[in-house]
Image (cartoon, rainbow, N blue to C red; front, side):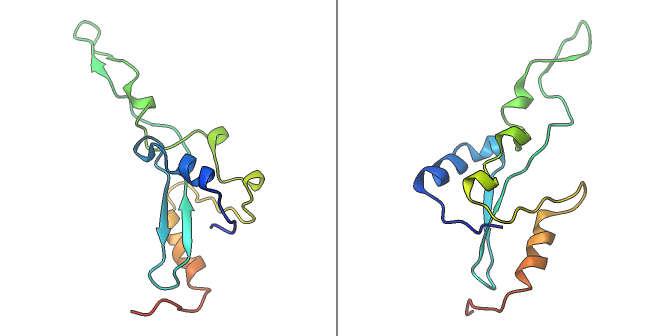
Length: 111
């Protein structure tokens, strides 16, 4: 959850190469609150070319477009001004966490 006033530089860095990093934001239709999501983890499957001789996957294509980042590359940190940082557990949706957090606030967006 975002509790920080972001700088232009932070937003440019956060939203740069989102197809590679998986970083994105969710804006609640109910409250108007903005939540930043940063998938952290590693790719569990290999991408590349199958070598016909060895029948093994070769190449390093999966590291660039894995849709997540390594933990040490996280921008959602206390050092960047975030007061409250939530982490989903394996198998838990970040959107479920957002729904729970968002339900604590009154509806302010009119339909």
